[in-house]
Image (tube, rainbow, N blue to C red):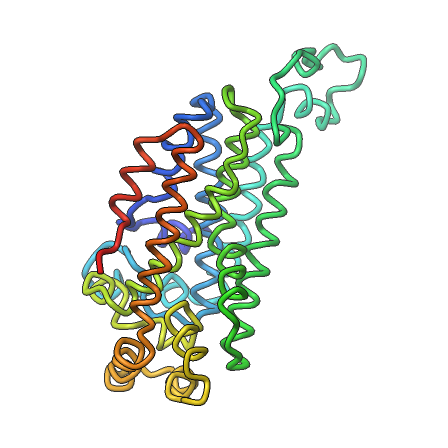
Length: 329
């Protein structure tokens, strides 16, 4: 019962991009199945718990991919269960994720943390001293890995909220860094946990590729939010404008013609009806050419990601995923 807001948000029909990325990275890393299942579970717990809180902080009305066509099926967890229950469920899930994470630690380390296993009890596992392959991320630092990415995620979300609430437009570089912190955090956490548990390519750094994919995915999402009929059907028409958020095409449009206050005025009003949204979209399309610019950036990021995949030895799953995410002009 206490976790109902969490189980509600996980009952979705999303694209499961994270799971596909796990499969892709595992072609390189060969994480044992039992550990891979734990990693997927941990990352999913953290990610969806974060979404519960983000939806409250963003003032969102719809979340893409919620199943069911009834009125209750289209609205957000905190609208169904209330803000207090939803926040508590999210915090609860964060700690459940840390509990799950403990099962990835080396056996000797887990038992060392158990007060019932004294130094002379004979319960310690000598396998912890066995020679292990050199790796960039130690399997003894998993808590630090996850904690660092949670800090990044909250830092990015904090900036997103600050810019919205103070109506302060970031620079393009500031926006991309925020995306790297916020959206990229769960992808980096996934890659780092897999690197820590890998049996092959243990000294190869897959974090730069994770960062590229995270930035590409978010800017693509920003673009599709204003351009895609599918997004309109599942999240609502130009919902990011209703939330008053600064996102990539909007940042470009504001910075391209800073003397024109149209977009800032629309963001300040957070319109729910289509009229102002259509006006803002037409301005971004025809006056500042922000959609053309965003597409050019997307194509550049896609090529960088494909180049990194090839540099790392090629990966058919990642190549297919990038094919699927490709946006035509």
